[in-house]
Length: 332
Image (tube, rainbow, N blue to C red; front, side):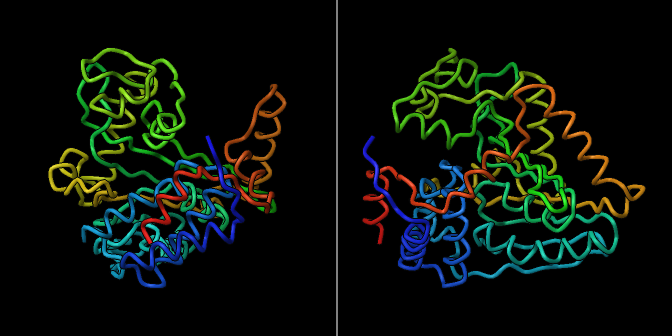
């Protein structure tokens, strides 16, 4: 694979220029370019520049409103709804998270229910931001069907990621962001692009046979949930929480309404934030740190998020797939 070395600033500028030339206003382009740059910085390659062509597809088709503004509605002291108005989810989160933070700090717990936004980014940015504000956070969202329920060979669930973050005052938070599928579809697509196999149990061919060929999964095949029936149940939970609970679609309903332009479909997201200052006996951070020390003493154990936070310290250039860079430049 041939790569091109780009500084973090160059990654940001390339993403922003491409977005501005495809119908985004400055605010939307800046927010999304920042997110893309940060994904590359932290090593989340399947959610960095790799995603930009799909965002452009949605903008060009008119499905995504690159100049739209979300509308916030406070249902109660602890429930905040945001109508996305077909904005990109990072823009919706930019408006909604400050409201959620304030509500959770005052009331102890608060919920952000997002509808009609286009989410294809990583989910750690939203939960990590909440944890940096001293809040425990959980978020989930669905997508279009790509994952077969345990016992099936046809897709019903999206890859349905969940993200959790735990605050650590004075330290980087513990954060995980994971698909409830055996592997995120973006990672399967990257494996296909780079000619890598995927682990056994990742997915099935269109005939329902197990395969380690990512192309057979992305071209008519299906992903499997992680952990069999257990992962299938968690993926079902995400469908309910990011669909019926917030007032948006299930993955199969999303697919029926999508124009299949290759861009992220419209959907919902559920986020809950909890203040440990309100719920604990006051020593929650010290008690949790004792647990993390114990956990790391067990062997070669890495806390979730540590690798990303280590990558973040490197401010140098990143090596980006040359074919991807050329494709992005052609979109401007």
